[in-house]
Image 1 (cartoon, rainbow, N blue to C red):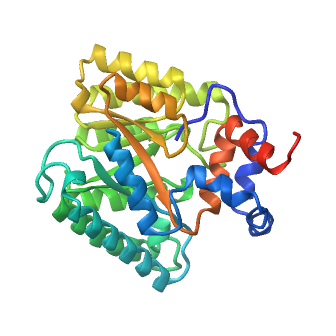
Image 2: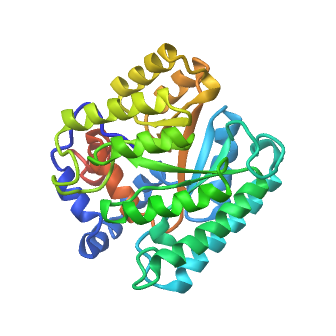
Length: 330
């Protein structure tokens, strides 16, 4: 969700490994990997994810749930992913205490429960009609989420998908403006303009720094530039008409968001912080103690490899935790 104050020197290599089948075979076969993955992934099936969700809600967190998977090249698999989300939404809807306000299309107010969806998992990468397939599957999920009173956020992926993704988001928001939000990545050079457009529309936006390896022509590569872009985008969203979701683990960005919210002013009901499952639990507790809304991104599923390696790339502390466990005596 956001790079830390200290950059990870192995980040480029790890991001390349996240898309490498050979690296995946090597890492997933390491005996220690599964134990470390459990820190970042809430189980391989829906039942395990729901256990984690119940506990987080009990501890006054909001949650967003991601069924892991991306780069689907099989139409049948894309439909199966959509079906998994429909079943998940059905389960969440039955747990009335986690659903926030009374169910109904686009009811107002921040929702304690949300689903996060990657369009590449819904068929966006299919040759020919991938955009249409992803839109169809995403629309089905959005309709179910709206009826259940649950938010849906469309995740960002690498820059080659951005135009298609934001086009689908706008189509879905025409039908379910109070249900559907999206993610914008501050390291992309285009994002400041995208923030202005979506803030003017009153959209719900999760702002993160970005977690993919991108060329310098389209993305800021230096930490200072990414941080400056994040702050510019944050100012736009805080002063806009929408609902900012400040997705970062960076203490400087957290402090900046709190100061901006006070200056605008924007009340605690009008924005939220977001952090990843298993990362910076003490800071999560601190923000909750201050009365801030905090949402935890809860991933589950057996297609965890790409997500896991990007978490190692984001923070040196994550990588060192993995290396120490994998190499006793390090």
